[in-house]
Each structure stands twice: as structure tokens, then as C-alpha cells.
Length: 196
Image (tube, rainbow, N blue to C red; front, side, top):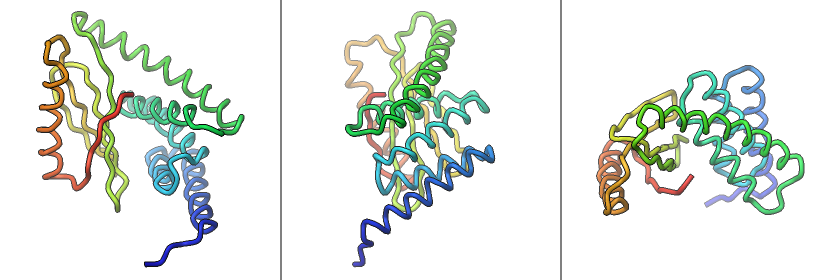
């Protein structure tokens, strides 16, 4: 098995990240997000790629009014800010973008609260990826419906549940297990859950 020297991996990451920036400048936001994701597959802590993917996700949210990519943008920016030894420039950019993203997220939560005032909303993220492609899954717990959206190379699944039962966690785990079984029949990637 051939393993590339680290310097070559760094060069590949730089090329992919620079391609993401080029796509951003051309307003090709799906392509920008995909190139940044490919760079992050080599190093999840690559600052420029993480910020460029978040920029692409925010742009996609503004263009399509899709809360899924907004949730992923928040996750990316919080991940970067929680990473040790991040440069001052990256922190400044991430904080500015996260302020913007949190403003959008607050509006989305208020909108959902107006539509269903008795619900106690719990936003969560469900992430998965494959070796060859770079799709990700995001699940947001909001109400009692399951939606599935396929957009380019990104597959998005919104998992919606209503809170309020005593066995809330057990019910979540059982339903997520059922959803995972169904997804694995169609999509060849593993999934994991983490709080947003």
C-alpha cells in the first residue's frame, strides 16, 4: 500500500480548498461545498476549508431557504471555534459567520414555534459519509414528519419527532435505528448522531 508523504497531502488539500474558493466566487455553491468537503476528508481541522464550506452552506441557505444547510453551517463554525490553536483570522471569520448563521437559526426556530406553539423543539444533526462520494446526512428533530431531499451529490434527510413523552430518548433511538436500517439499504454509508 502506497502512502503519500504528508507534504503531498497538504498540497492536495490546498488545491481542493482553493477550488472551493473559486467556486464560491463564481456563485457555484454546491460545487464549493463539495470541494471543501473533499479537503476536510484529509484533515477535518483545515481552517480555510471549514470556513469555505460554511460560507457555501450559508449561501445555499439564503438561495434555497433550506434550514438543513444552515444547521450544517452552524456545526462547521462551532467545530472550528472549538478546535485548539486556530489562527486569529480564522476565529474572526468564523465568529462573524456564526453570528450571521445564529441570527438565521433564531428566525427559523421562531417561525417553527409560531407554526407549532405547543412543541418543544430540539435541533439535532445526523452526519454520515462514504469513502468514494462525499454526501452528508443531517437530521433535525422538529415535528412528526419525515422528509427526504436529494440535491446534487448531497443527500439530506430530515428526521422529525415531537417531544413530550417520558421515553423520549428510547423512542428516538428506536426510530433512528429503523431509519438507519432503511437508509443503509439505499445508501452505502454509516451514520452517527451528535448534538448540534
